[in-house]
Length: 336
Ligand code: GDD
Image (cartoon, rainbow, N blue to C red):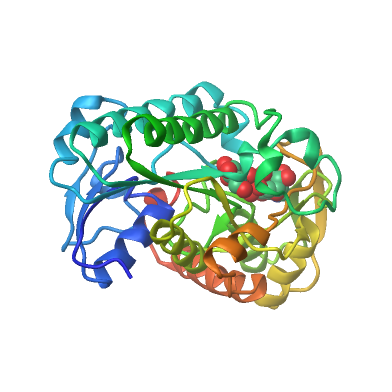
């Protein structure tokens, strides 16, 4: 367990970053939290952390303000979202390269000993994800390089930047490739939401409005593996403490189609089966994606715990309670 360390978490106002701050505070660390978002848009905001709101790490002077005297840095920051966002904002997504690069430069100057980079399954070669049900993606399947355009290229480039900083300057790096992380305190509306949150919101709305139909992007047959946030945090911290410096999948291996996931959410909400309106012109991403977890089991002796059905139950409960709050300003849950 990491404790009594001074840790900088960049992207702390975001979904995964917020959960990471929570856990590392509970474990007895001193946390500096930064995010480009103003205070009112942070998903979670902890008083016992040193919080820097509206701080843009694409500007290296900001990075240099917060890396001094820090033991560890977790870079959880990037401009991102679900397929609806990353397919239509490639230049924005690629500019996150500045965050990682500037942070590494600042960490090297300030002799930070260990650095974490949150990469993504979008780093994998697209041609290996063209079938609906595929074998899990192994770490070596990122090459030859042909990742998701924009967002995936940024992740792949930044992974390599981490490796070269380790080789050339000796900073220890750890890199996780996250496979569609979901759970409470994340975006569920507004354009950046990923499929689990979007579909929980749509099913909840259908139930509330007594609708019998919902809109689904694509034909619903596309597949993914989704990982609940608590497992994501546990895997991240275990990876960080390991001595493994190459990229590792952090994902589940419970491969489902979008139609199957909707069926689970319908069961959770208690609604009758909805008629699906398939929107074939909406962003779809790859046809099939799933995580191979052989390497993570080998190097961390760890596997995810929370089944999709149980994670979706917690996510649906949280989203529905947010949506039922009268007069609630949901805007902070709609920004990534
Ligand atoms: N977002 C969203 N909203 N997706 C929907 C919806 C909807 O209402 N209905 C169906 N889908 C389908 C999408 O068309 C896509 O085929 C699939 O659900 C998964 O969509 P997302 O969850 O948005 O994205 P992704 O799995 O393709 O990629 C996400 O995960 C990566 C990590 O595995 C993105 O968030 C990436 O940024 C991330 O790196």
